[in-house]
Image (tube, rainbow, N blue to C red; front, side, top):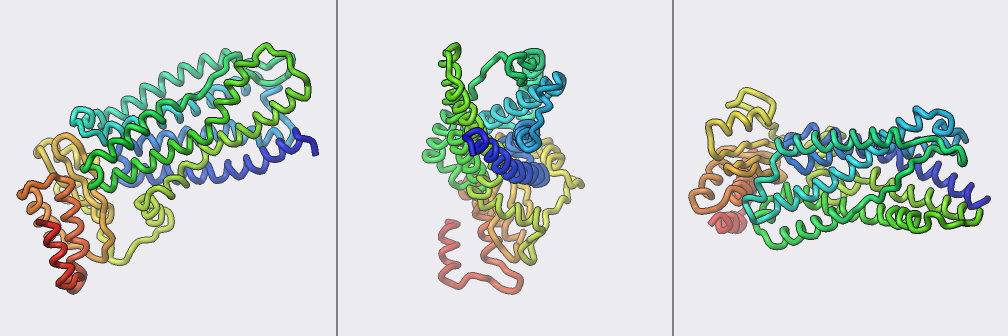
Length: 393
């Protein structure tokens, strides 16, 4: 079997595998991030949501096209100029939105983990909506330029663009590094387990993009350096095979997000079990909406901001949300069989009146409500009760 044939066979089977797991994984991301209220109001996870949508478009217009082309030995791009250009628009739009959302999510994690309150205020979900809309419009206009910059080459018969671009990973590396520094320096985030897990998801995503896109960057750089160099037919075949394999490696970035999230976040794993497989612990408390008379958590938050400078919303199985007048925080739930909401309110007020911040008091209240009380009796023996009381002090 020749090297070219082997590369094409790998593209078919490995590409089909990446396509299947990629569409399933990104589809699951879309479902989880759009259906769980604590994820919907988080700027970083909203970037993950938009990114997952763009990655599905990229996989279907790029990886699927390569698999079909090599399997059926027919490339529609060689015969249809409209499809050639349309595919380039979708490819450019989806890839640029994906990389942009990755960079913006990394930057947001830096802002939210900063000890500077003015930087933390930059991370607002309403502002994120505007940023995503504006950047999408910009990249759409950019992709329209690509539409008119693509043609079927009369020499090779392939659909090619006259421009070469190199995807930069500098922004994600830089903000990933400073975000890691913020995590080590701040004590607030150490107590905010829910968002800390989102940061871990983002940091692992940075590692994924570095590993999968570095070979592509090297290949593109090599192509720019050797432009105009006369190459033998054997060398051109070798470069063609290398480009197929490197593009497969780069496709991992578009297919593996869901699985990196599963690895990095226990909360995400639990949410997937609950939402995807309908698995729930017994006697789990369901979220309730009473004062605002709405099931929409975003509407409830907006109504509370009108009459209260600070507030806490309990979400049952999904933990709680605490608003300190500047930032909305996710408070990670503790595993439990029953919960005493009166206990939770009392401990939260106890923490606030004794000088604790909202995150510390909220985590303490959840811990007390989840561990001290069960259906019939206190769970803790005397020694453990004393330990819990000493923690409260």
